[in-house]
Image 1 (cartoon, rainbow, N blue to C red):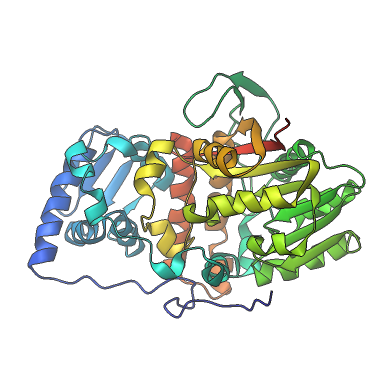
Image 2: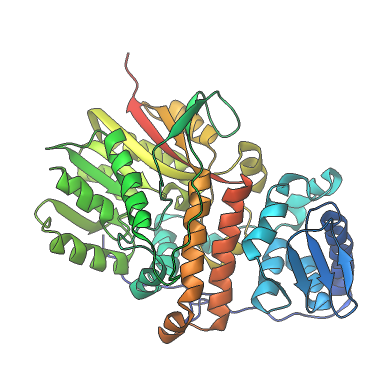
Length: 449
């Protein structure tokens, strides 16, 4: 499969679509008035403080402070574009806060009930739909991946740790087994929450962070049964750390990606580690795997299923089923959301879709279990839930990203990009800290007669 660097025409040099200007008129005035009323009612029930300038009006029950510098713009954007407008009004500086993640965590914990049930039924009428060009078809997927992962290897190196791992770290291995509950399909393990740690220089991560990223990868390889002689497939190469560690165990690795820049650096890192003879990195869509006829003893994928799109989850897992050798095992790290929220938000176009991950959508653990049972012979046999570890991972990334401001600007990115990525990292941290979204390592084996 031939793939070239490619961005949609509407994407600018910062990897973002241009920000649409506000338009006046009766429709904007009415939607802004509705948004103002709904926002004030919702915030009035939350443990936050919102201050509207210049009047000084205060809303909320007290807590992290949000300042509306330009309330008219904020409510107009919120009324016109909902949560996309909420994010865009932060991008323009219409509102701000000294503790972005702390503020966002409060509403995230009550996301399902912020809007009255009577109005939630109108969601399908007012929420924008995912644009056709962002759906994760074979024709669109490379552009979706390029939008984010081909921004700049140097950019990611500024805030990731030395392993260049762009996924949740696992800070320790202590766990508790809990009964079936929301976000699981049976008894499962939950990782003990980590203690937040800040090192003296915010521009650098402490050694414990790289250790935590390595611990995450080694557990996935253990769950997949990767040992000397294993034939390993990795879907989503990243910058090569998992492939290097699998090769170090004596495995042969086929790792696929749609990111040109990730592939180039991954190959350099794999060569530097001395494993070019054991690891083959290839530009390939996962859907092309079945046609190769190759089979693997272990299939591993870290936070890639989120980019598949709900229409293609069946194809993704069926492909894994097809290429898994008899007796093989599958280990996937997946960001998930509650099943009920997943059902009502399918096809929605979000701020994250528009500015960060085009075409992305989070599955639930339940839907993964349903699809694999209905369409494959692999079965979910183990789950490690570790959402608190992702909150800490993101907190560290965001801290380092902000501390590297001059270096980010030196790469050619601008102040708007800084605000977009700070919001992305803090918004994601809030999701995990509140429990609205989660991350798990999921292990699958083939069903036996």
